Image (cartoon, rainbow, N blue to C red; front, top):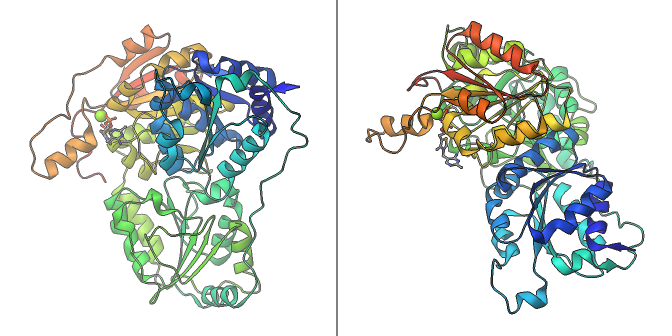
Length: 537
Ligand SMILES: Cc1ncc(C[n+]2csc(CCOP(=O)(O)OP(=O)(O)O)c2C)c(N)n1
Ligand SMILES: [Mg+2]
């Protein structure tokens, strides 16, 4: 016999989960015990929100769903941001919470509210686990988290049930389905003919390629047919960014769009490969007219978002779709006017990193010292937009960030989770000073986990992105500047190493030492001064 908590934990282990993060309360101690017994490592954080990002960090490395554990009431409420992030950023995250037994909830109010109702708009599904059905409900939740567009699922486990023996669940009901490639037929034939006839084809590649492992199929098609590739920020590296066909990331930078949109507007064929426009700003809305430009889409799930139209839209197995599309046809002409190569040069010139010092120099210098398979994470703010344009990814999944929700406070915990799951890889977190102040406590988590993560913080004593918008709008400076924190001192106080730098040589030394720092984290305070981003994106 096994109790409900043990059945839950066993099913998570079966799905490949090896880590769980969170902050316990008395209501979930039985679950924690079961998780450990099943072989999942539970790690304590300082905030439930950060715990969810640690879980996401492990997902990007292992491919297994992340697991977040919180207690009832305040624990659930604290996790709302990261659950919304998992929904917007397509992260399969299993959120386990404790709750009072239904009979008790009928007449008891302390810390009690309807967890499922709070989470309804930001989860793919929420289950209150029920006696006799626990195994099945967990299987359903796991399948839902991973299928189509991955996302968060919520499991509310009543305290009494957690410790009660469940009837033998029998063999696991396997509920996952394999996505299928496009069915042969007139639609596919027409799309193929459009590719064969194209003279100015362009690929826009997105995050769904990653979840499906379709990067190689994408890169193969691009190279075979010499099609230039624009990616979203999350998809950076699906085609190595050193490849002449790679036009870099797009999404948040009007300056990048200025050089990319002419290609979008003059392409005669646009191929959307796993492209989920949730990463894109308004500037990418309805930028093509499918009546005038042929648009072929391969996505993980049907698109009803209204961000753009298509001529042919296929959903399911994206790699199978890309492979079927090129069957029987050979490469044709591709941009005889050389426009993509010119755009690439213009982008390089627009986002120059050869300055002596400044935010682009910081990005450039760190890139030089991080191996190709090193993992960088980046927070939200002005630094992130610049970094996403300047930073080159030679491999997919090597730059992690929040691009759907665009929340602050993600970079540090994402880096901790990634490093925990991939201890042999170098991991650097980039963050703004306000973003780091939001999650400072997690430096103590790093200390306890003894991980040599390097945290590079851009010191400008301001919410630079917001200050820039205020100034551009002719508004007064209000609520965007703050005092200087001595981050190296904070790092030392929390058991790490800290150094302030204001030139490339010192930064290079600090990064090299930080990556080799054994079991201690390093905070590098890169002093860039206020208003460092004017005209840069
Ligand atoms: C949780 C959250 N709160 C507010 C915002 C709005 N916001 C976006 S960027 C930014 C400024 C961040 O400042 P900092 O971390 O110092 O980065 P910088 O812009 O200075 O590079 C703010 C407040 C957000 N994205 N997420
Ligand atoms: Mg700042």
